[in-house]
Image 1 (cartoon, rainbow, N blue to C red):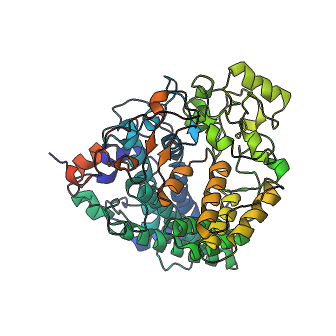
Image 2 (image 1 turned 180 degrees about the vertical axis):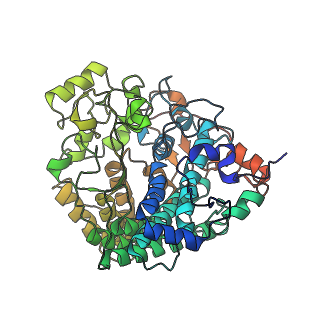
Image 3 (image 1 turned 45 degrees about the vertical axis):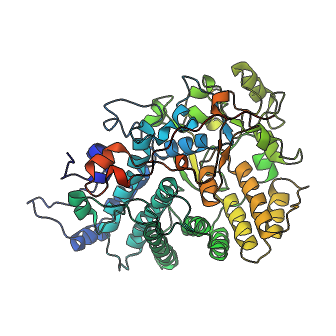
Length: 539
């Protein structure tokens, strides 16, 4: 029987997530506090509003947030949004890994994460809706017409982060926006309907409805952040965990790119570049293991990890433990993460990014002798990445407190180039200028048609954003398949050639959500698909 009176979208685990949930909902005498009273409290004590906003970004990184939902079990791939990054990268063809007991991405490697009762299905659903829940708490507490500068800034955080979560969900649970506008996507839960949803559930909204909400949220966030930045008592973010005006433009650029609104995507990417203090990493900057901290000049937005966080004190239940190479963690025992051999061989020797990975002999010109010795001592295979530096650049450190990248300025240059190419502008010139200036002085783009240039930009994104949880979204928005032939997969059973728009590409709504939500039946879920069949490999 379906359970009725609960916050359905986080199933039975929701209340375990939110020790920092809004505590202004009830007055001491038990009466419900109105939005107006909340806004007055927040305007008089900005620290309360800031604490509520901080709860959003605290949700991005958590130690075992789904412990209760998964049957009082600590899963070592359960650590917040970076779990989503790890799963989706493993689904693709560019991050090669071995099926081994110490690899906590095995289920995503073989697509058994698509089973609606899988642990990963719950983790993805719960984590993204947990962020939305916290966003709704912030949004509901601030008057949308507020002229208080701090309140404008905080409201923008809730709206932009909510758009980010729905952007993830929309591409995991349905195919690309263009041509699928009326297809079922995910339930919409906002500050306005949350109480009704808790009592009565919510159906799957259409793709169009979800994208309309995303755009409405991010458009308002841009307006609010502009106002907050231009006021006499201007408010700017304390650090890069918060969403700046540049990041909001960047999020809108991503959304427009996904919708194939190419001119708008190019314009937003340029606005992000203009509004940001970030600058692309130079050849010298990225010619060594890096991408470790939000303080790097090319990071626009990231998850800030502190040494005292549970994901760090756990030692191994964190993103870099699984992904890294030069630190200690699961990476020392799971065989590491390799780039597709087929993709690696397309990188020119003149491109500094070729050194982000070991070559066929297990060497990289980007490494110091000490770093190279560490790679040898662990026994990493050829093509293993050395892109991400260990914490504080301490080789073999057991303190895995690396920050996690959510947006880098380089992505904006690539969005701009693609948007221009697909809307009649000089995308080829924009791409060549970017790559020649920051990655490969000898680079030229041989494509001439808009579609050819777009394909080359996709190729550049695969290299530039490798390991940053972005590739799956490119696969979905460009209607690609997953072809692992020739990539160098260790296990023949993991060599797939999945056609575009195969049912296995879509995640299925988790079983606890189906059981708890009276407006979604098993028949409303995405189709069950058989596991992909291995195919003969190629060299």
